[in-house]
Amino acid sequence: MEFYELHPVTPQIRYINKAVEVLKDGGVIIYPTDTVYGLGCSIYSKDALDRIYMIKNEAGTKLFSFIIPDFKDISKYARVSDYAYKVMKKLLPGPYTFVLPAAKEVPKKLWTKRKTVGIRIPDHQIALTIAKELGSPIVSTSVTTRKGELVFEPMEMQAKFNSQVDLMLSVGILNGNTSSIVDLSKEQVEIIREGAGDLSLFYK
Image 1 (cartoon, one colour):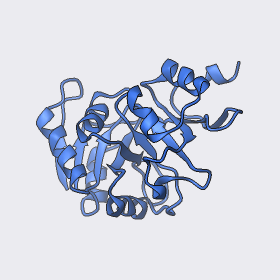
Image 2 (cartoon, helix red, strand yellow):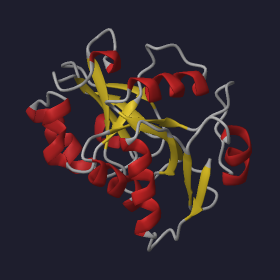
Image 3 (spheres, one colour):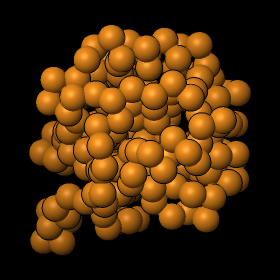
Image 4 (cartoon, helix red, strand yellow):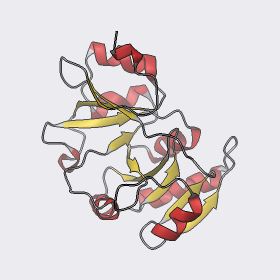
């Protein structure tokens, strides 16, 4: 694993570019988000996606979120109702994953049985820059052990995943909470997971 320490406020663009090249070449990276560290690959790399399922010890039906850099990109990968758009405009960028009906651009392997996808626009410069420079979403999931326990310490990640991940961008310990997951794919809003972020908007 290539390992680079980035400045959290003014990250070195050369290291971000290295991460983008790894993703374009079908690799897997660990990178910081506004919640915890993410394990990611390009949505168009089936082999890299299979590696992430293996690293996570997850079945191939697990919903992973997509990191996208900007609102204008959402409609390429998901169908967005007027209500969903208003909600996301209010809360994003931020620590939320919004479940929406999948658009045709999304590879079928990444659809759930209900034909939905999870959309993320994190409030984090490094994550957004990677997605922007890549030019397509990053499939993303929290870095955990095979038992599902979150890993916060970069040195521990380097030791655990050294032979499984191609590159890691570190900004130190991130001991936040995972993103809140909100399902906006149906008429009735459903809170799938209460994590980081204010959810009071949905309880009025």
